[in-house]
Image (cartoon, rainbow, N blue to C red; front, side):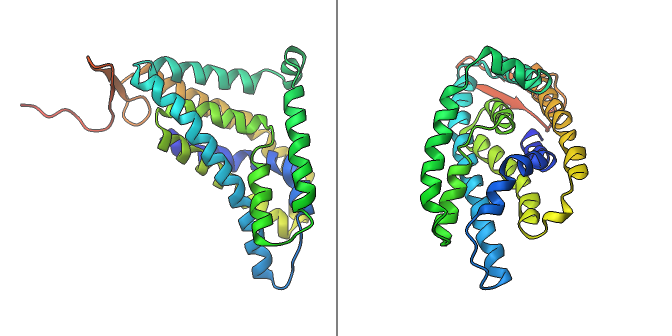
Length: 241
């Protein structure tokens, strides 16, 4: 259930993407030979972002898988859920005072240097690479999603989680490419308020999963076998012998 929640979270939070990535979308190289080619070029750009998110999910999911094999999946899930709550509820300015994010600023500068080259070319390959690089830019919204990945306990599930998250952000950014007037400040403000709500819901789902309460789909019973491997008793009632 929580894997599919990534799509909903991405969809609700995509108005945050409009504020952060909207200027990039509007500045993308244009080749308007036809509306379909223009749509396809913007789709390719966004799929580049999704690919980057999926790779990130694969990497973070591999870490979660090691915790799962060691028998600490419950602890990791609860910890990640609490971390998401902190990231959502604690003001961003507080983190900026605690941690100097100079490394992120330097990384963003490096990415933009490559962008300056790619933006001169309107080819499909350039647009895809711009999307790939865009997915690497520092973003608190993406970090919340990645925190959720760690609780999936699998490389493949982690990759799927982030791919669904990226696909959730895609519709609004495609709309932005064609009709900027539809996304008024009032609409963006309204949906931006839903981001913390979505983050809290995902955090609670992850914490419930870690608590192993035996609730089908939401908090399945996780049994640690003698080998240390964890077995999820999810949705099928035990058969009587």
